[in-house]
Length: 359
Image (cartoon, rainbow, N blue to C red; front, side, top):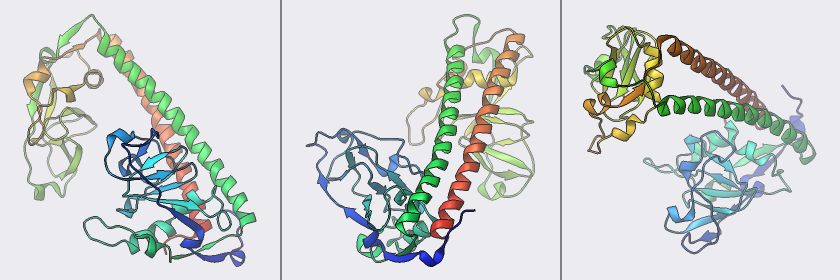
């Protein structure tokens, strides 16, 4: 894919490639306003897209500076390593590392941290069973081969160019998704032609299947969170709508084909032909059914509470136009997501060609 000369590579211990930054900060006594926990790091993503504030947490944390990498030293198999672009603090369950520019360029270092070679090595040296963790004294002695510094600049420029393309697609997908949310808001806030869900549809309880009966078959078994197995028979002819009843209460799922809804769900039956099933799906998505959840040992939602909610039901022809808008939006989002996945795959191939694959 790219031209490399392995004969020019040199081997370095990780301790020579990076510095372990362990500057401690008390979140209750700092002027910094950004906190990053492991929950804020997305797997296999260089960028830190989520963050909290120091007042969210207690206990000593680690100081981070722009250019540092917050690496999830616990459960390294989750492949979390985010590039810091701000001044802040992070979880003490992370490892903060900073590139040694005499060995590896800071611009290339984040991509090295996401190479299969590094991530698989990190998993291999993790200690513990319930929450495997990496110790600096162990990983610092691990050895890796790197291209020369003058070559690293070319490689870093290439990888950041690919990353820029990925970010462009992500930005477009997010903007289109905002249009989707605005369309849902328009349905939710429409003042006229509102009807109770109970006047439009019946909600039926799903039927339980033992786990051993969810292993083989043609038809998807649907729980409150989505597909939980396959079965040889179906209970409902698709397409259909599932509403989470227990667990992921209020979650709304569209099922394309015949399916078996289990007892953590409701499945929807439209009472008459004045409402299109797909429109009803989007109308349900426009309201926050999860807000009806009753907090118990297993969070659940009451059927009558759903049936009493009102939604906008326009004329049949208008429903068709609304469906078309939503389908166009999701066709565009799906296309962009495919572009993101393809470009990420190219980026990953380049990273592993530079640094090597599985160790």
